[in-house]
Length: 290
Ligand SMILES: C[S@@+](CC[C@H](N)C(=O)[O-])C[C@H]1O[C@@H](n2cnc3c(N)ncnc32)[C@H](O)[C@@H]1O
Image (cartoon, rainbow, N blue to C red; front, side):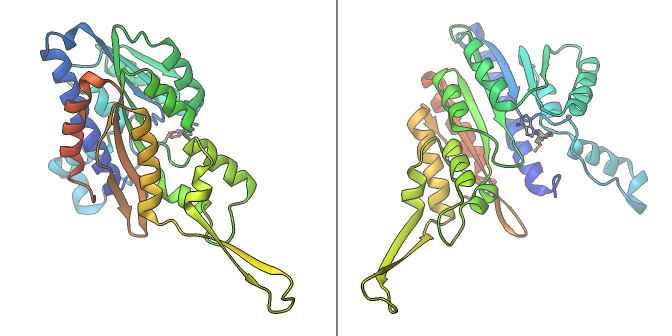
């Protein structure tokens, strides 16, 4: 369920990274030259939907305080970072959720907040094109429910050479499209190609065997099947990131009771900041299964 412990783990890692990032840019005289932005491209509302506290706990002040912290989504956690980012960009395609995001402007009056009610892929391509990389740096967080981020967007983010990217690779959603017997149907195959930015996945993830037909020895029978496992699928995407970004951290695996759901990944786009960024991310990722 959305709001479970893997959600908390990913959000705590993101918040700690954002705090460290802002401290570096605030304290380091050369880094202070840059304006920093936090871009949340699947922003939600700032609150995580969770069941209300029940029974004995519902009036306990400590439990209420802990629950309030648990409920904070990525947007709220980013707005609470001290010192704040110079700019916040929240992209959310649901108009109702954008209204809730608008209300945060009153709560965080010291923050410069832009809300974009649009598809994340389109909005991010525009945002990348407008970023002034001579004087701007940014952290982008991609937290989709499913497989909705296209590779061309990740490539555009990398090409800025000014952005640190946190992305939740939607392993379970992608693995569902990678059917076990035969190749995925065309619509899924096309989607997988847009997500990976190449059709090489088909060769790497599938094998074909053929043998003489028992019924008609003149004919051959062919069977195509998936050979890739969790590790190969994750590694394929990691390699794609490594090919575009200055450096990439070790991935962190987020499970629920049914298995692997997402893989949290971090990629640093700016050569100068990459070493520090990846060191911090690697340290934080140790909390997750690796
Ligand atoms: C997993 S939730 C994000 C949760 C958020 N990071 C948090 O911690 O509160 C994904 C959000 O992305 C939005 N969304 C889904 N597809 C989208 C798209 N193509 N573009 C922009 N937003 C989208 C959904 O409405 C949902 O609010």
